[in-house]
Amino acid sequence: MKLCHISDVHLGYRAYHRSTPGGVNLREHDVYTAFEKALKSVLDLSPDLVLITGDLFHVVRPSNRTIIQVFLLLSRFQERREGKPLIIIGGNHETPRSVDADCILRLFKYINGISVAYTGIEALDIEDARILCIPARGLGEIEKTEIAPSADAKVNILTVHGMLEGIGAQYGTAAISRAKILNSNWDYVAMGDYHIYQELAPNATYAGSTEFTTTNIWEEANSPKGFVEFDTEKKELKFHQIETRRVIDLEPIEAADMSADEINRHISENVAKVDITSAIVRQKVLDLSYSSRMNLDQKMVRQLRSEALFYYLDLRPPRRKAATATNVRGEGSARVTLEDEWMEFALTKFQTRPDRAELVEIGLNYLKKASEKEGA
Image 1 (cartoon, rainbow, N blue to C red):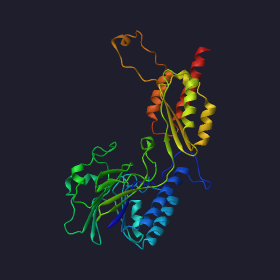
Image 2: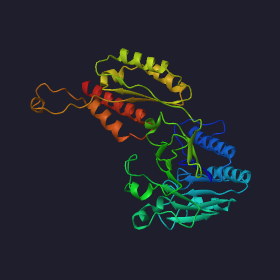
Image 3: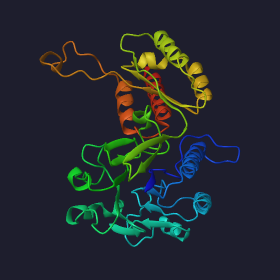
């Protein structure tokens, strides 16, 4: 059996403030386009089975436009595949917290050949294959359930949406035991939830996401996006990369001993090394003093922001020095200004907000006005 494994599509994801000519958030459009490209590539491969291992949608209640768009896309996809099986399991993003609330995925089981699993651990029998599905809502059942292949099935596949031990950060749920999931007796183990492609074993992978949709996309900047092709008879695995919006994490600038002019020059030189046109870009500036912060070339920064889809100047205040017997008494200790305190607080508190730099700027302007009023 040849299968294709897609995961963490996050349709309906939105970010930044740019739109298409039709008024659709540009990142939402990117995410849909990446999924469309993945499906087109899958059609060319003509697999017997397609798996989507969670987070097809970014939110529990996607917009009507998103639902209609995806329903039509998957209907056309399945029509061209003549109804060959496609299995979708529920991820944490699209699954309601309340067991009484219905899941948007139920709608898609009315498309020819599509099966969905989101209420708990469920086994699906498709021709000679058994697919054991563990959606996000079934993670709590793993420890009390025997997770094992069926002796009666010719092909056994396990699909899971969750984080294994040692993979990524754990949020809200305990890490899944590798011993419970990674078993060579499975023909294939399809994992979802982790957005970076990773081969866990010859028969097990995280397919990764199809676009950059996490709160910290910078850690994925050098990781390709795509889907997995696997042949259960030949035991051959191949990752297919798809084109996405470019994410560029520029080399950090250590600004502790630099003047504002030197920092401006380094910012300009870093950008000159790459093409940032329409890309998502971050430039970290470390150990930046308040005085240097206020003298950065804002005209240059505005120009860079106009060239990129999103240019994030990530300004970090001076690192706090560890207390010593001397500076605890206040002798020879470096003075931490109120502005530096605000920058440190804001950059941590608003870490996941795309407008973090603007919030920092607003706070610094208020402090500057207060200082000027006090000195008047």
